[in-house]
Amino acid sequence: MENQREQRCSRLVFVLYPFQGHINPMLQLATIMYSKGFSITIVHPQFNSPDPSKHPQFTFTPISDDLSQGKVSTSDLFGTISALNRNCEEPLKEYIEKMLKAEDTHDRIACIIYDGLMFFAQSVADRLKLPGMSVRTSAAASILAYAVFRRHDEQGYISFLDLMSKDQETELQPLRLKDLVMLRSQNVPELIGELRANLTDSVKKSSAIIVNTMDFLEQNVVKQIQGLFPAFVFTIGPFHKLAPNISSSLLKEDTNCISWLDRQAPNSVIYVSFGSIASMDEKEFLETYWGLANSDQPFLWVVRPGLVRGSKSVELLPKSFEERVGDKGCIVEWAPQLEVLAHGAVGGFWSHCGWNSTLESICEGVPMLCRPFFGDQCLNAIYVCDVWKVGLELENELEKGNIEKAVRTLMVNTEGNEMRKRAMHLKEKVNLSLRQGGSCYNSLNELAEQMLSLRSN
Image (cartoon, rainbow, N blue to C red):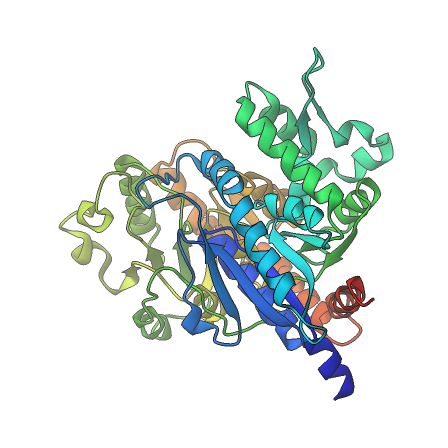
């Protein structure tokens, strides 16, 4: 009890990046650290604010971001990141200064823990002489992929990858990181170059790097990162397994799909969801529908508002939809994904390959059909298909014939069954890492100890 009281004397300030795929893991991490005895303050932009009533144990504080729903476009994510880092720095600094003036020895700020995309928080931590910890809500490998910065001379873009030995390059070859870096480095706008430089610089200055991953998934990558950055890397994923029942969805989940799943045969359903941001045009949407319908496999498809650019998606479905598909298809605006992936009827997941979705699929032993849209999703798809070999990628234009073939390969062919076995093996390794003495269990305890020591004097 005495140790618990000591831990309650330390407060952690979390700084959120205001999009669904980032809010969830950050609040999960906050819940994990709360269970370790820390008090939690959540600082978030006013845009896309989380619901405080779902987390009554935390203190929520909105800060000015000078953004509005009308100003934010999902097609200009780099511009949004830049605006948030520019607009939120002074409001965060002013708020932390007030906290420091009011704090006493029983509730001191241990450190600022920030989403890596909110790198301005490290600048605030440095200015106020507080420790800052960078959280990577994507794969650890994305740290290497984004470690590309602008040099103001004729050499242009260079990468930390250039510093690696040939042996190190060989270890990381399956990820094709050099190809990704070359792709990202061609004709890159100055804004993106600056953002990457700032992101990497904040990681270099952080007191620790927290990654939502597991050692066995990215062992070689974590070693390379540890050699390139001074801060220790804590791999304490999957966050959602350590903080179950944490719901921070910005969209209302339709739980009726669970009763539909209950009526389906084991491993027969392909679950289709492209996350909270990705979008497609009308032609891609209809090709997706016909590919699913023609595969003759039961499917649960998330068709959220905004999925089809400039249209109300469901209205595009042909009038013969119900007659053609019948009870073999279920469409919802948003699904309780963790519950869906854990359901025995789900045998495959067609995903945009966001990191949260990728981890959630691995944790339930569900193989994947990959259709990355942007950002680190391409890297995650390489992991799924080429490194772990628990999925296949839908490349090129979406076309109903290719979709039908890919769905059947994943769901009923021998190749898909082999992927399912490998996915189940990964699930077992996840469970081992979470147990006492496992890599995640140990890393989490080490992280809590470091946090307690940061401002102990």
